[in-house]
Image (tube, rainbow, N blue to C red):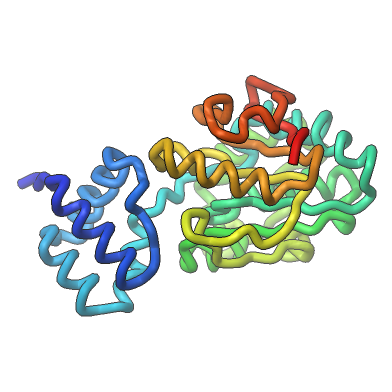
Amino acid sequence: MIQDIDIADLKKITELIHKKYNYDFRNYAMSSFKRRILRMLELKGMTIDAIIKKLTDQPSFVDEFLDELTVNVTEMFRDPGFWRVMREEIIPGILLNHKQFKIWHAGCSSGEEVFSMAILLKEMGIQNDVTLIASDLDVNVLEKAKSGSYPIKNMELNEKNYIRFQGTRTLAAYYKEENGKAVFDKELVNQVSFRKHDLVTGEVFNKFDLVLCRNVMIYFNQALQNDVLKKFHESLFKYGYLAIGSKESLIWCDIASKFIVVNNEEKVYKKIKD
């Protein structure tokens, strides 16, 4: 029988996780949060009361809970047009003023976007001039990202994206097949630092020339989106670039006037005011 969850239960879970583990989901979009919890109940065959009890009594369960709760569905070179804009407009724009620069992949999930960027930079011949930080609040997906190991069945779609991106090689040139997995060359991520960071509660920790946070904020309510966009503004050097998801926008938020639109279709903005 399919369970339903009332708002009181959702609030109980968000308050418990915030008070006990300092993860703040209170300003996530509740419809999305509810869908993830329902999916978790179905997968684990548990009741909402059992989830609450386990979170209360077994601190080790929180990592498993976060793993199910955070959305980790992604692709390499997702939206190939976006990656062409990165290669042909945005990165050349940064290189006009800086030979070396820094990129932050915020909410990097299992790392497909990070490896896509690493391949792009390698093909541009500037891989060693760029420092990348890839962050996520889920330590389990960070480990997957570090490993650079993905199901081989995913590579068909990833290769199609790469072909549409118009890369200079084939995607298969960057990985070896091992036990049904595509294991990417570790040399690609020599310049990448993977770190745990919560966009909701985490502090601004560095300055960057380019911040990518694509398809993460759609799970936040408007107040939280506003707060996170302020953090991105603080995290960017003046004239740095911010890339967000195709269904996301910053034209409505408090710092909208401090950015200009560089590419409306691919949702890339440039910081013009501190």
